Image 1 (cartoon, rainbow, N blue to C red):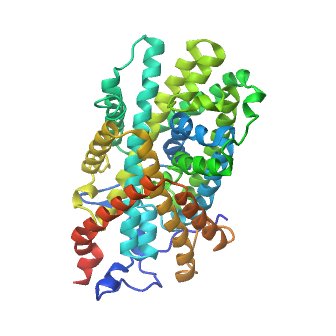
Image 2 (cartoon, rainbow, N blue to C red; image 1 turned 90 degrees about the horizontal axis):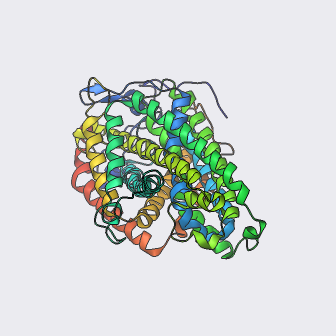
Image 3 (tube, rainbow, N blue to C red; image 1 turned 135 degrees about the vertical axis):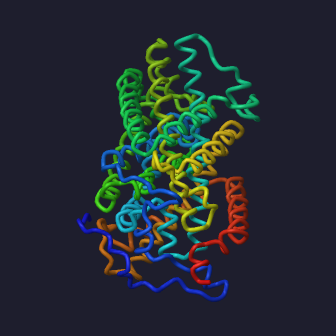
Amino acid sequence: MLENRAAPPPGNSDSPSPPSGGLGTRLMRRKPVERLVAEGGKGEGGTLRRSMGVWQLTMISIGATLGTGIFVVLGQAVPDAGPAVVISFVLAGVTALFSALSYAELAGTIPVSGSSYSYAYATLGELVAWVCGWCLILEYGVSVAAVAVGWGQYLNELLDGTLGITIPTALAAPPGQGGYFNLPALLVVMLAMVFLLGGAKESARANTIMVTVKIVALLLFCGVALQGVKSGNYANFMPMGMTGVSAAGATLFFSYIGFDAASTAGEEARNPQRDLPRAIMLSLVIVTTLYCLVAAVAVGAMPWQKFKGSEAALAGILKSVTGQNFWAVLLALGAVVAIASVVLTVLYGQTRILFAMSRDGLVPKAFSKVHAKSGAPRVNTVIVCLFCGVLAAAVPLGQLADATSIGTLFAFALVNVAVIVLRRTRPTMPRSFRTPLSPLFPAVGFVLCVFMMGNLGAVTWVVFGVWMVVGLVIYFGYGLRRSRLATAEK
């Protein structure tokens, strides 16, 4: 439920001050909501600029979400679920919906760049906030690399259809997949970096154009591929049973990573309390509708057994249905633009989360330095893009997608808990959006996230465990002592 009320002014908090004392109390110290809001936009040497309305914010979330599941991961999910992959998309979408409601409430209440990291800091304490932020680094940073890998597949489709050439496998695939270095993946990350260095307004304008192109491309695919749909392709609808549908749903949750991207723009939105909840919910509805529509047409136009190993499945379907390269080339062009917009917006979100963590003292100050002219955290952007670019060039897609999904699900689970906690600790705080039937819906969101995590493989859990251990080492070795809350206690 939307309410047109602003966030409370600084200095009007009824929450306790951050505690001091032993290690246990220091790990649980919380940052008051009013302080989070008051510090909004402020960085080292400059401030972020409020330049985005609800349309731009919605485009950021759609840009960060739409494309990965359909253009890249669909070929991995269909062999698990068969034609019932449509149900897998719905399952992943419903899981995302409950968390989206929680995100919408907190984004309108705590409109800052840190997204779920900042929400956890205000409700669950510093250690949990760090763990959440560390998961977000996995979610945003690593998903950029995963998406960039798929970009190279469609770039080759485009080059082959237009010029009759392709990038050699040695330079278009990571080690372990027949190549030495994925040059296209690195290239798209570097192109995104150029836009981001120009500032949020310029990046949002470029993203809006790219999002429009990819929506048109997907609708075009549906219109053309519909001619090749055969009822027999739906006959064995659920060949692997509900187990396969659930497994595919866990993988396809990767496709919904990014709907929360608007929440990372809280300090660059003109009216964040009103516009952030609207952008989050609107983007999720649009993305889910398109995913289900395209998936239904795709599995109807090509037997599900043929999807195995295909990372450019949609282009192959159009080529098969029409017998011509023209439509496949056109779709490949749309996919190249679409996936580039995902890379751009997810990188944007990653830089803003690190900006918030740096401002709190948990990571080095370099990540919160703002360029006076562009209003962008330039050092932050360069470091993040170089890291993601090298990762994209060296690691296979499948491993990245599942590792990203588990980090995202963990962060989403914490957001659902944060809504329940904040409702209990700050019941009178003005909220521009309220999650319906709280605490039931947040609790359902939490359970669904845990359920989806349980459907991921053992290797993914091992990777996640190692990632968490590394994060805790960094926190206890650096962040615990350098936290701004810690230095304020001395």
